[in-house]
Length: 84
Image (cartoon, rainbow, N blue to C red; front, side, top):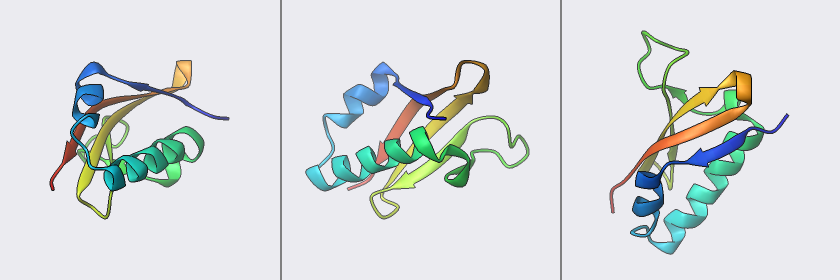
């Protein structure tokens, strides 16, 4: 089952600043979130494993912070951080 990935407005704005290589890597990370969500990423706070999660991209230069909402089969990407 594929998850629907929702990118929040802050993330859409941050995407405009990424270099091409980072954009390609981000797109690959979104595919991972759609298709193999639980095989990738890790809890943002290990004390709350079913809360926010994070997934690194672009060789660790970027991080996606996201929330899985199971009952509607969605992943909400709420923050994107990239250094470089």
